Length: 522
Ligand SMILES: Nc1ncnc2c1ncn2[C@@H]1O[C@H](COP(=O)(O)OP(=O)(O)OP(=O)(O)O)[C@@H](O)[C@H]1O
Ligand SMILES: [Mg+2]
Image (cartoon, rainbow, N blue to C red; front, side):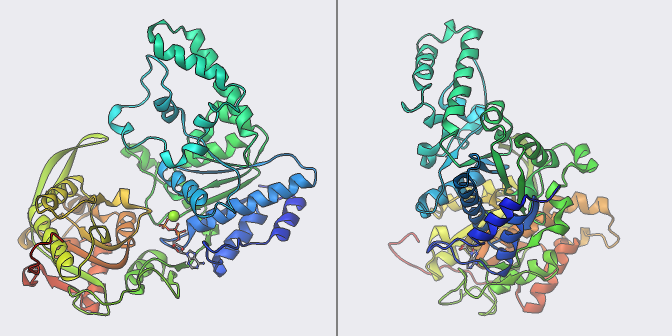
């Protein structure tokens, strides 16, 4: 890639590398370096381990890029746009919402563009099935963003095509069986024209990497996109990253992500073996600026992931959300908020129904019971709220079983989550159930890869382990069979670390009797 033109480099120097706001802390050294690098390069990468301010840095970039574009326009340049995208609607919604709600004064003119299937859910075209009903329940346009969602804006009376669209939609509703293909083509053309008109009014567009490829969007923005930011780029396949870069013809590209957390999910094993699970971000990761200070986790929680996944480079910020008034009574050492409860349960193989269909999954009754005991203990002894504790497992069947057991005890209103869906989230305390288990006599001393794969499965995925271990601010409790888990090298290192810290306990030796608190369901 050639270097950035002198005008943009000059404008970048003029506007500076930080955004002053009460709601956003000033940059730390690495965040400043990352922003500076992004502002003066045509292609740059920012690697941010958990809680290091990736999303904050991304938001500041949006604001700064927009300031540059506005200045450029003042000097006689064309109207240029910033596009912020990511692989999932959830991540894009989160950032758009945060900017809209928390920093309204600093927030540029933003618009949220959903993909066709989401738009058609709100404005259906007769006789077309766009998405299966099961997945659409949780996959609707965010209602908090309704006022800045493109599909609503083009239907506002200010848009010159709104009336035409309303006319078609009335016809679709009243006589769905009489719609000719020609009508649908005309309707789509009107949407495309309305989009072109509407996007002229905005400076920053939020969409997924897939939606950034839609022809109507590309037609409306042709030659206008200067900066493209792709967040969560460690989770995007190479084509998912490359396609928007090429299609938008952006002059400046920033990839933000962390290839040590979840990789792209590739269902086809062959494609994965051929390299599709390696993101473009990972290929270029050596040239990324590394955000080295995290603000989420207690330093003791950060220690292991830092050593194991980030070569010890991840530091803890001077202040953070992990501060506690009083350590929990469950800890073996009051100064170390970590605990591994060893238990030899029995695995069960089950079929569970998920969004992707029926899947083979596993659960472990003894671990379910122990999770419930620990949960109940925390609620009664430490007067916690439901929302303070997140229960996680990598297996859907175990998540179902734990949710069920907690519900039966009247103990839960929040969800139990898989490691995969917890990425990006954070909670005060995490209880993790490992599930996989074998009695000691069945654990072979000469183990090969096949044996480990069969008996440990994907709980050895270092990317998932990293995500699990970096969600908690104040403490983690792991429930699992240490004899089996230590057959994997990451788990072995963790068990060694917890042993040195004195945080290993046999589940059966724990006294987890809940306090009697008459009249109150925790
Ligand atoms: N320079 C800073 N000084 C103090 N606090 C900061 C700084 N940068 C970020 N934070 C805080 O760190 C927390 C995490 O920030 P953010 O959500 O942007 O991180 P992230 O890297 O995107 O996390 P995740 O891994 O969950 O995606 C926020 O609460 C933010 O307030
Ligand atoms: Mg983030």
